[in-house]
Image (cartoon, rainbow, N blue to C red; front, side, top):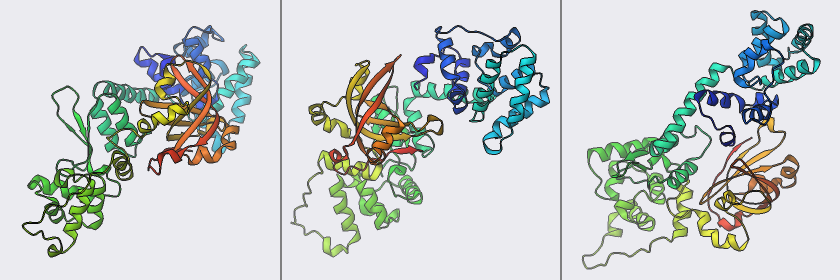
Length: 445
């Protein structure tokens, strides 16, 4: 996401190169920034020799693929094809088993004998070591690029189907179902709630008059509900529509746990009304009939509807998302008094040395190649904010970084070619503002 605005791919092969370059190997080998500078005309494209121009011309003089490293060894250091393949094997295994040292001597001597400079030979070997951190063969990168192109096309033109498929594939992927659904809503997709009278186990699409179909949340979204229970509900409903909550519980053989889960998820709304009424209905099913039998002249029990905040808490607790107001929108007035900016504000600010942001923590990443840097994703009602936390700061504010559900970040805003990052200078846990809301992050350490 950070690379796309900088690379601005115009052809399919640009995607192939992007897949290869956003990998630990090229990053460790210091290939990313030289390639981008050359790609954007900020640095002259040079080649150590005309022989190597043929090897590196399509990647602007920067080795991105394993095949290029093998070809370089043949052309510049006198390797045979078999020896070059052995170099490839050694690159892949050197961090676990070593074995690159003989190649360092051989590559250096071969390059020097053919007129290449010592500096070039040393730099090439460092890049080769980088490929040990997962460098890509070109064919592999091309396969991933094809998936990338297809995914981007679906995300752009078939937003509903794309979101639906991602959620049904959970836990595959980087984003949680809540993030996928919130993004789809921001892009105009109608999201419909879990409902035992229409929901299958998986999320499905429902036709609308307009172009994008609606996304119906499936029973799989109900935390704790067994798939076997969801499938029984599907089968029984297909045979005959459910008349009421008692009919559902009897025919789908719902035990106490399943009834409670469905009521808490508001999946019984079309049979019983709101959550509180549904809880009353399932209690009636569980008790002997005479206790709840209603006299002919007895008035129906009036049960108050849950508040917006109660619904939001129940939604997150049972389905991990909400179709009501985003939690941050309910806090926005309070956040403005604290001078906290939204993600929408940040996109319009440009570079700024002093900015405060408060958002729900949806992801934490600390890649092994990032020298202890932690990348945090904050979400609000308008979108995402990417936060960079340097190693020393992460250690200083470890508790807030690791445990916060709602995180306040004060720092420096950087906007480079449309890519906005917040460089953290101070972290504070503000989870108290959520009042126990059950929001969860995905952490990749």
